[in-house]
Length: 98
Image (cartoon, rainbow, N blue to C red; front, side, top):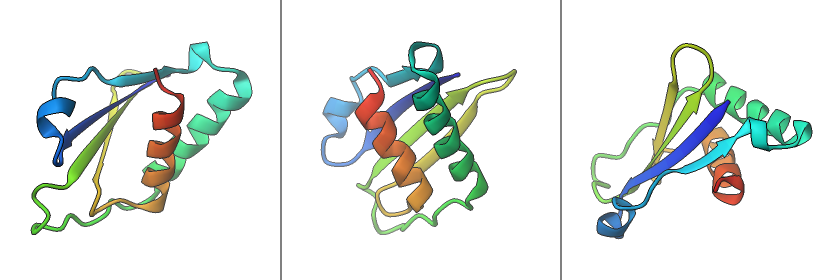
């Protein structure tokens, strides 16, 4: 499984737009760490998405793409509309992805 993170918007949009996605590949992780990642992804899939705040147009948006199986899964949240499970996954990816 391959997981990638891209960020959009926010005050640093001009900078973050030019950065490549951060990527974690379970083939490169220990079985325990890969299992932790799968658990975090399953938790996000089980939660309804947060509701965006239309007044926060400049909020940072995070897109996590999970490539596993025939079709990738795209998970998206923003600073103003983020579930706890998405925040946990985002934190994991930011700490562990290259």
